[in-house]
Figure 1 (tube, protein in one colour):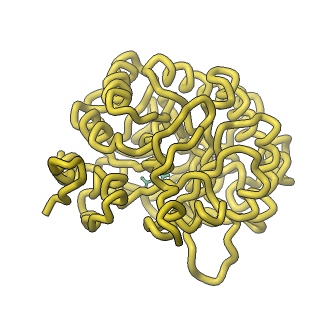
Figure 2 (spheres, rainbow, N blue to C red; figure 1 turned 90 degrees about the horizontal axis):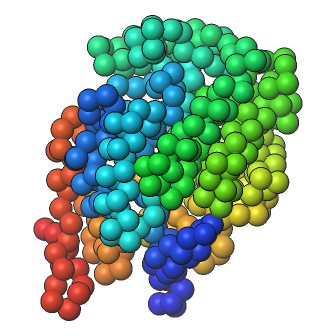
Length: 369
Ligand code: PHB
């Protein structure tokens, strides 16, 4: 591969109304370190600021309404204090020249009464409990059978995402990524393993996709479609998810999104194994920018860009332990390994203490030892 072709990852690209300085995206990652009132802390400001050599940062998943929560110490964006705290994050990131989208989720059945307002049951498309247990903050507990959302509650779910988009604007975000992936509420509606409804939001894919499409339309109504992204995970079994035909389900989603015109579709899909990748078909079906994610290295990312399998590539784990990931890519510096023990929760260790390389006199990076 020529030098030019091998440097596409670090070349600028247009995303909606924005000119990104490179095609390296920091993937959304739950870190469970929100502070009092589930607001981002000053360490979170530092964490995102350290990683702002990315072209685009997508924040950790954030609930837009109190009932959207599903884990201890994840941040929200529904109180004035949370909005003010997020504003400090966006200002720090903008000062370093990156763009930042807020990822908004509703966790649906991946929650627990002990985390819900008034001890309520979590909600879902259908009353199907995921097998196993979850961490509630006071130890492990079995998942409960969620309450199926009534038809007349669904406009309220859509409105919750729109409210989150308004709050994201107030906090200075450049856009919003709608979390339609990884087994949370919108994905629970999309995939037929978790959606057994027989009304207008269940059954054939046109109905299972309706909630995600209505949410996307509502968020686009707030921000303009060019400032909206959608993330899906067609084959991820995480959170006990299954779909009988991921290619058909997510192919429909990708095509139907075109009518709304969000800036990007962000697909997380792990390569390897027997199953065929769904991503290439989604890339072809979707008219907007395509962000690929799932175990990419610099070389794999360059090859995906060279073959136009993706427009941008999102990196998760490498960004935890390499806050200056794009600079390291630029000089071919080695990547530091990430410590899994500090991924979720805890203090500043494993959060803001991964070293950045030191800049030499000539502007190149002296990788940190
Ligand atoms: C997690 O906390 O395990 C988690 C959160 C959000 C995701 C995936 C995993 O999208």
